Image (cartoon, rainbow, N blue to C red; front, side, top):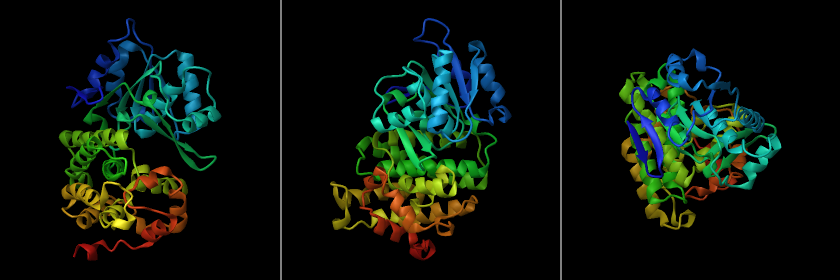
Length: 393
């Protein structure tokens, strides 16, 4: 079925969603659109790739493979390619890297052909206001990023070792497809890193000082949906219905951060990814348990949220309930999920905690955390052993 969420983002979801791709490409255009399909390097080897090709056959799309991380150079090259092809619609079939590359490139394809410096400048300049000439239809093949719902794209400036973001209404996809069959064949590790990202996004958009009642609703929904399938991910017992729940959790987390953005887990994740090469969801998830407990214990003198400590604790209680009932038990469940899926917990990472903290606080999102964080307090928090077994008694 096709569902229109608040904000008028058409979303086709459910088994067989691939077949509904064609319907999303017809409508406002009075001619057959020029379609460009952006995919990752592993697209042709996925079991569902032939069905995607069949669904788009009538549009004879040009297929462009985006390889490696989303960088200013890769986005500039893809934007030039889309401009040269005269793309009307960009179908982004892939994980967060592919979707973000397609979103950013479509937003920057108008005007003068961009280079990497122009992409960096666009990230620094602020919101991209106008809808791009090429509309993006996002088709996630992982369950985590929610990039199909967000008005921003993450880029990695490897030259300067910084995470960048291109933001604005012009970056948001025009439509999305949630098809659980697209998760078939993913490893438990891939599914785990994805759902950790969704958990963090839902939690952070709820506890952020920027949170709104709507972002809290979307965020707590994302956490609840994700919590309901964690055991099935860990046990590798997913069916189509459970895969759709994973996709919905990711989508709801995307809706949440579209309103309130992420905060501390993500700010800490950037140096972990740049220093250790951790997958994004893994890098975010390793500190979720710590921050659930740390933020819930916020004292009045340390509270950054003008709504006060009572508000912060109520929100975190809502988040903790589906994960274990209390923040301590929720933290334990996240920690056990990490290790149960073969992901290294934070305590076992070979990093300088104070260096990570010093870098994390340079990202503004770190300071959207409801409990104030500075290099000293964050370094101390990261350096503490989890000791979750003892905490939960």
